[in-house]
Image 1 (cartoon, rainbow, N blue to C red):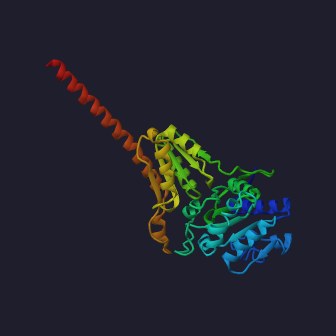
Image 2 (cartoon, rainbow, N blue to C red):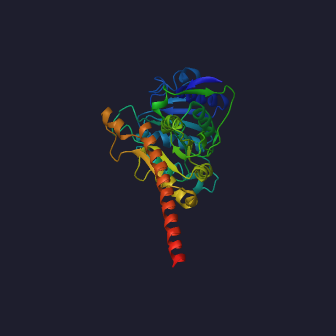
Image 3 (cartoon, rainbow, N blue to C red):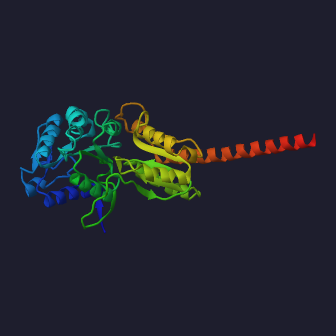
Length: 351
């Protein structure tokens, strides 16, 4: 297979879907003449024309609202919101209208809108251009959420989202655009929405990692394997629908879970994942669940401070070793209790 960059895979998915289905068109700020700030749609206006690649005013509410209207009359719009932070500017359309129309009409109306946006952790764009809207979107029934971590997943998930009849928010990590490469088939393919991927198999600890943190977890797992600790890394790929079965099956095998997310830990995705395991796989746990995430402060501009706030390979390694130590302590406690019972039993029999 060819090796593509993350950004190239996304661009190719858009181009192929526009060639496949004339109902697919793009809208967004600077996506036409400029080709987008990350050049994902560079050359698209020349190829498909201004009718299908539409530069818009700076109005996220209008962009998403126009997409809803177009979808209701049979089109399949893909809109680009420049930064994930700006989703809140279009909040009424995104949270109050887009996800509810199909439900409120009993399924009679479909709203096949894809909202593409990006967030970045290591671009140091400060508090108003670094937010991650996972939780707000997960708490909005009716929206599908894709969070690809590899070029293969990015292309397959985006094509699936465009063909989906539900509203989709496709969350790209800008830190991956031109830094991560991977194999991508030339033939057409899609990845089923709601199907997680086990990026690395292991027997000792399960790591549930999201987006960029998948790569952090994989690097940590590689280092830990040299010490005889085998970590299983699960990439959810979509947060809604969420593949609970793959996660639960993994935890049943390893008995330990660490969640690594690129967002603030408090009330984050990790809290929901922890609750799922506590409700559905508690008896299989051998140690407490650990969550790793961003600090509870707005993203700072300072590079050294920002780097210190986010989970790193070393952070993940320390968390894994902490769970392994917990396991050994628990074993020791069980052995101690067993010995005490035996001594007590011997004393009773001697009397």
